[in-house]
Length: 88
Image: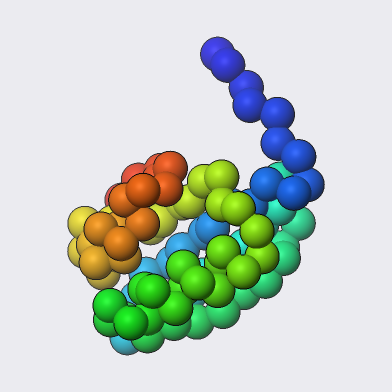
């Protein structure tokens, strides 16, 4: 098994999907919460979330819940990021 060493300046976007809002968190490379914010479920909301997350630095990974249902639209939006798919 290969383990990747994370540094504090690497950012991971965590994304919890819901019907009316999506909740995003940013963690640094050692797991410290950097920020948390809610966004509307629409194309503009997805773009706002990306803009918000990138304002803190470079994303190295993203974890999304339910990429096949409520998170499908955002999954398409962040397809250029490294995404771990965690469906329920």
